[in-house]
Amino acid sequence: MLAADTKLISVDDHVIEPPHTWVDRLPERYKSVGPRIERRADGLDVWRYEDQEVPIMSATVRPLPGAQIRPDGANFDQMRPGCYDPEQRLLDMDIDGVWGQVCFPNFARFAGHRFLPTNDPELSLLCIQAYNDFIVDEWCAVNPDRLVPLILVPFWDVDASIAEVKRLGSQVKGIAFTENPTVLDLPSVHTDHYDGLWATVVEHDLALCMHIGSSSVMVTSSADAPLAVQWAATGINSMLAMSDWIFSGIFDRFPSMRVLLSEGGAGWVPYILERAQKFLDVKGGPSAAGIKKTPHEYFRDNMFACFVTDEFAIENRHTIGIDNLMWEGDFPHGDSMFPESRVNLDRVLADVSVDDARKICQTNAERAFRLR
Image (cartoon, rainbow, N blue to C red):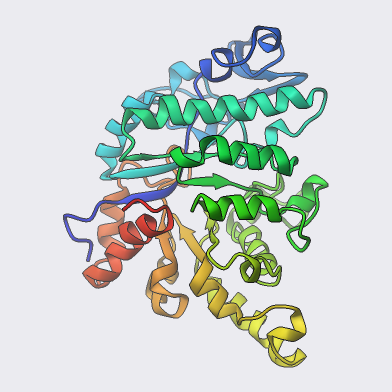
């Protein structure tokens, strides 16, 4: 059962970046091309960035009571202020029974890959830095105990990423990274290309969070498959990321790395570990795959699987690893259980021991993000 004194810590929520996020922080010469909100002639708020026009997806916000949000996008005056205002976010967290949140961006995309350099690499870097300054100095500063700072890095430039971690590493708890750099035409995690970044992350004792879709692509079966197919198969992105990291050798070179697989669910973890182990058994053990430990050991020592709702994972928590499971609220996105996150957890954890429930909902997150 979920004890009344358990402080729910969600390891995956989202900020709907307020209109001033970049306008207030970019140099004057970039204000006309940097991210800014404009209202189109048809009345829809859209982000404009360089030559892009990006509506705020309706499924990524929580509407105000009675608001009629259009299917092609949402306006700021139609959504709960807690989507974009940190003071109001804390009030929504109280309604939902949530103590703490780790937030990913929205417009910037889940690893900041909105800002992959196109026309101006300097603007790309400045946009990353502006978002991070917003998160540290404005969003999380409202309540640093409850709003846990997660920043972006310009992962397409390892040296710049290292510099950004060094700039803010003492003030934050984790960084977002793409689940599959190759989709973005970058070197894979099977190279040593990012080793300088991994070393800096370890030096600053930060968690590395890989959100589904942070490669810019969600795996689906066909171009004409309905959204339901992608929704049902959400975990595939995290399955691939987990398999990549197990066989990458990164955990051998950086044994204290902590990696979170955000919003991919967890019920599939035993199957992937079993398949990975079978490969090693057939090939002659870890050394045949260029690694030192078993897949189960890497998952146990270095990885966390995170879920919004996954009752199968809860039932099989000890097969997965009770110390490697974490809950996420996903506010204000459509997968969220808001305003009944705690109510739902009370139900699904009713037959779970108090200690196990506390690990899933609080202490594993505290350990992963060094919150105590």
